[in-house]
Length: 350
Image 1 (cartoon, rainbow, N blue to C red):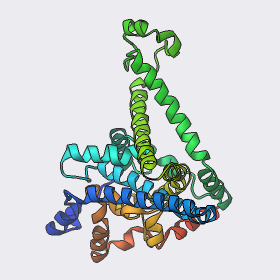
Image 2 (cartoon, rainbow, N blue to C red):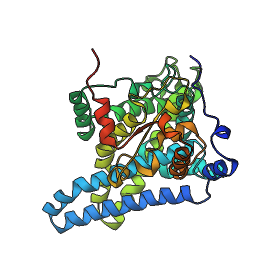
Image 3 (cartoon, helix red, strand yellow):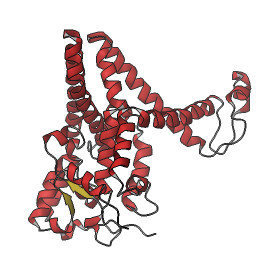
């Protein structure tokens, strides 16, 4: 299958407009990451304050705290995504650091692995080669099916299923690193004997993609390191409750918000045509949606697919310029996320 057709910005924008929307700020990406963590701190410590005041106050406040935390966790993942496109900072090394540690590592993602996979998604959007196709292919679906998925997200089933798989691969990578096994299935046997790990590791036979397992091990290592730092900060300033709220949000609301965001971007679109304006969906978001399922302008997804070089904070301007040029009728645009969910749970044709 050939790659999807790309938009030509020179045919759509004037040179000044194009320069303005593709300009990468030296400070806005850093500020957005700081903003996400500031909101996390206020929500987590505010929730802890409520629990210290009275257990009933804690029960009342916790659902709102978990919603705020899950939204900012998704926000950190979105900012890592911007880093994968080189849009957090004009300096490449600083961009990669910002995308790897203070954003991606917090939710268990690796910037470099994500970048390679995600650019393939852009090249083959909704085509058989698209690594994200499984996120949109099941739709439309029934409301009961969507509710079951939401229940699995909010009860932690989705999180533990994913982490179990990720940690299993990571453990495989750790054992490979300990015996210095290379990607072609060979290993430094002298090191293995010296450490007396070869027989205990259970990796005597060559295994495909061992380098991928090592990458996953490093990703999990960064994820756990960030969690330890957060736990230390929590214990130093207020006790364990702020950290517990962060973890519970990561296990529950983050998973649900991530699912809704994924659905909204491509499910039930007409992607596959020769028109690049149909490759994704833009969804208008109110303040509650921006706080939860659509942080940091991720709802302008059609604009992102049209022009990958536009930082997230310039996507609203890109949308406005497209409207000024009368391109909105060619785009897939929904008025809100409820409308998206109604569309993807519409009765399937016989």
